[in-house]
Amino acid sequence: MKKKLDKEKVVQELKEKLSQSSAAVLTDYRGLNVAEMTDLRAKLREAGVEFKVVKNTLTWLAAKDVGLEELEPYLEGPTAIAFSYEDPVSPAKILSNFAKEHDNLEIKAGILEGKVIDLQKIKALADLPSREELLAKTVGGFQAPLYGLVNVLQGTIRNLVYVLEAIRQQKGA
Image 1: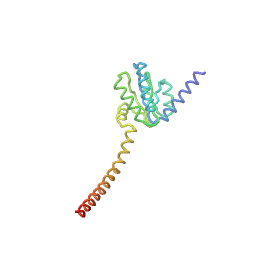
Image 2: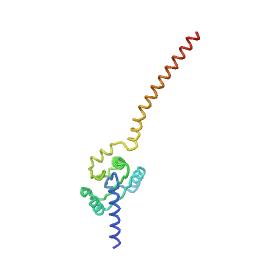
Image 3: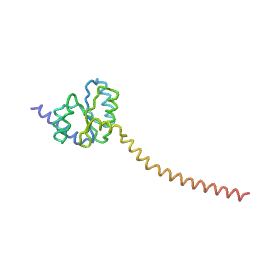
Image 4: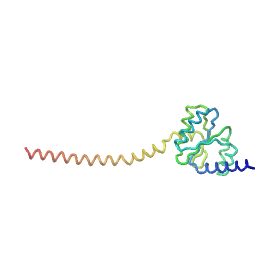
């Protein structure tokens, strides 16, 4: 009886994570040693991404309840899911980079804004600039015209000072 309640609690928790996350990436971590898993978890935690090893049957029940039936073919073998609640690019980027360095980590599929995406879309997502980079580019885009305006105004004032200095020298001579 207690086991059934525990499983229901896990399914409920997974439903919440699947429905609240902006992105999630499913991985097969078979072959990674403890040190590699610890390193991966630390990198994900740094970016605010939660990494959870899950049972496929319980994940399937949760996915079905939140309308992600297309996830079923990817729920085979050991599965861990990286959940991101704010930045959808972070888990894809971190896991893709980690998979390049560690052949044992296999990315299976992902969920982006409530839709199941395949490996190609995850790689495309990983190639996008991070949220911080996009914000920096936006701020830079706003700053560039302001810097141009300041330069133009300074140039006009500088020229006025040169003209006044030339007039002063001319009157002094």
